[in-house]
Length: 219
Image (cartoon, rainbow, N blue to C red; front, side, top):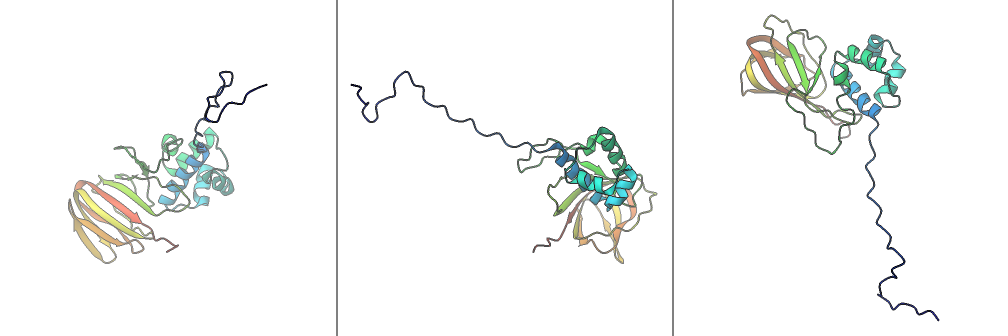
């Protein structure tokens, strides 16, 4: 007659205890989604439409839309054509592919995405310092550098509020009918839908932080 082990007694040596399941690995983001988000961010930062970029890259607007939402994985030829259409290198377009999405974002010195704002030419660079994810933009921080004193600047207009903080140089900055002389340490905050932009570069190189804060439509 087989005896039952009393409650709490160890199991027989012939049976191994079950091992705990290994922790589930986080789901890897589709690389096409990362690339598409970067492409869309670069396009919107230049105020370009889908049709504008699609025409430059010799692809259809529908294909570009699917690419930006990560529904298709572009070929190497398409990546090169798209990067040229956006005015960046292919490596910049793929910079966020496979990046860890842990909630914090570190952009090392010199690694911000270089963008081209509509109307600017040589001597100006705009480095995007944070790469937002998701379908909507809430803010865009730029490190702006001007090096060409002879440049003539157009007026910019965009949604939201812009905040400028001067780091180096002296610039005459126009907003609407007013012009402000900005020196290192100065700040200027203004509505983006009023025409604005540099009027004269008094002392170059000029470096400033520009933060554009967009209105939250859900508020």
